[in-house]
Amino acid sequence: MRLDRFDLNLLVALDVLLEECNVTQSAARLHIEQSSCSAALARLRDYFGDELLVPVGRQLARTPLAETLIEPVRQVLGLARTTLARRPGFDPASAERRFVVCASDYAITVFLADVARHAAALAPGLRLDIRNPGRDVFERFQRGEVDLLFMPELYLTASQAPRLELFRDTHVCLVCQDNPRVGPGMLTLDRYYDLGHLAVRFGDEDSVAFEEWFLPRHGRQRRIEMTVHSFSMVPPLLQGTERIATLHRRQAAHFARLHPVRLVEMPFEMPALVELMAWPPHRMHDPAHQWLRQLVHEQVARMSGAADGPPQARSDIGHET
Image 1: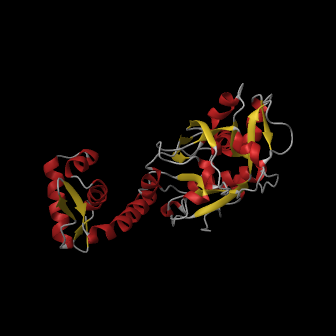
Image 2 (image 1 turned 90 degrees about the horizontal axis):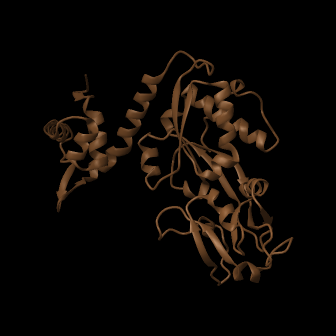
Image 3 (image 1 turned 120 degrees about the vertical axis):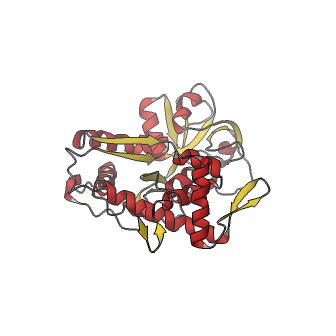
């Protein structure tokens, strides 16, 4: 099919080629022969009057024009997929849909586990594919491969995607219940820095622990004795030690109910965590997606003691903030 002399079948190939910058890899993703992928690239070059991908050493690099095409092509394909997925209305009880959700174990612990339970009761045909955000989470999100992304605001400052602030959370220290070096109440600043720390670090070894984004500068360095890549690993690794961990209060309180650990107040103020829910623009008016966003919103309201009503009652969680 053609639109203004452009073969719309080439849009999918263009999207993959601009992402991979490699004809062989693009052909594999498109499930076509390499010669067919090369032919598609030749037709695209002819239409745009631009090389689009040019050799740089042994690699292919995008031309300036190709760089400007990445986002519009993704948006067009995203809207097309949403249009094709539309059905008359949305009935949670009978609908069958799959949503890819990216969230850390913090979000899962604090509210997503409850969202999943409510979704199972209200929409048994709904499938939630919950994944831990990886290094390529933003690339996958921009390609429309992620339906909902839950992350702190500080990680999403550069994104223009629609989002909703869910809640704010403060920080607290967590220690073993019988830690002899930490009494009840608030730690002193000196004791905080004197203790060995268990830190949560996402990414490679060069990345900083998550709390480093929030810690004020006192001209002193913490002594990090152990790092882990998941919040849920913290409680068992604190037990029987004198180490301390800095966590979000909601999750720390959850851990204290399940493990022999206790909360201790911080010796200084830290900026609050602002937890956001973001989604691709082409999902804004998808009835099923709106319903799921509303379900999340309602669960967060219940968690905060201010529920708004049944998920079916509203479908307006679709405004950018």
